[in-house]
Figure 1 (cartoon, rainbow, N blue to C red):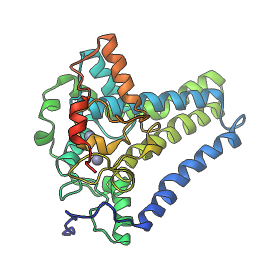
Figure 2 (figure 1 turned 180 degrees about the horizontal axis):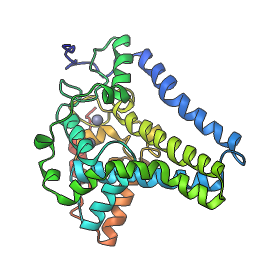
Figure 3 (figure 1 turned 45 degrees about the vertical axis):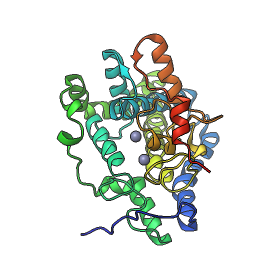
Figure 4 (figure 1 turned 60 degrees about the vertical axis):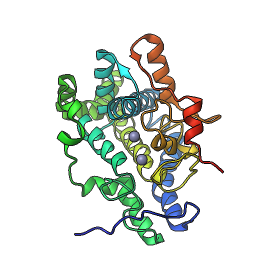
Length: 307
Ligand SMILES: [Zn+2]
Ligand SMILES: [Zn+2]
C-alpha cells in the first residue's frame, strides 16, 4: 500500500488539538493510573522488595538504552572500554526493546530520514490534519513495531556487525529478555518463600517496569516529534519536552539531540536535567569512557534558533 508523502514544509506554529488529547489519553493517563495504584497495592500486592527491584531495573535498563544503545552505539558520542561496552549492551537488552543491532539500525535510519519518507516512526507520516496526526501518533508511538520492514543491518550497522562482543549480546537477547521478565519473580519467590511473592515481583518489577520503559522510550518517537519546544535548528520536527526529562534520563531534550546528534549531552539549557549525560561524565571520571563529545558554547551558539 503506497504511503502518503510526509509534509516537508510546515509552520512550526501550527497547533492541533487532537494529537494533544491523544497524547494525554493514551500515554499519560495509563501511566498516572499505574502510579496511583502503588499506594492501593502497597502492603498486600506490592512489597518494598518489588518496588526496589522495579526501580533498580528501570534505572539500569533505561541507562543501558540511553547511554549505551543510543549515545554510544548509535551516535558514538564517546568511546568506552570493552567492559563498559558489553555492560551497557547487556543493560540495554534488559529493557526488552529489541536486540542491540536492530535498535541501532532503526534509530540510525530515523536520523537519516527524520520526519521524511523512510523514517521508521514519524508521527507526521499520514499528513497534518488532526485525524492524520492521531493516526500518526499511534504509528510513531508503537504501531510502527507491528507493521515495520526490517532495517538493513549491513547498510546501517556495519560497525556492530564486525564487533564480536556486540554479536554475542545481540544473540543473547532472548535469554536476557527471559532474565529481565522472570528474574525478579525468582528473587521475590526465594526471599518470601511464596508463590504470591514471586507473582507480585513478576508483576511490578517484570511486567509493569518493562511496560513503563517501553512507553517512555516510545514517547521520544511520538511526543518528542509532535508537541513541545523547538529552540534548536534541526531539519525535522523534533521537540524538547521537559515533562519527560527525568523518566527518559534526559532523552526528551530531543530537539537539541536532532540538532547535534553526536553530542553526549542533550539537556544543555539552564535547569535541563540530563541524567544520562551525568552518568557519562561519571564513566569519564572513572576512566572507562574517553573522547566524550561535550557540547561547546560556540557550537550551541551556532545551533540556537535566532529570533
Ligand atoms: Zn527523533
Ligand atoms: Zn538519536
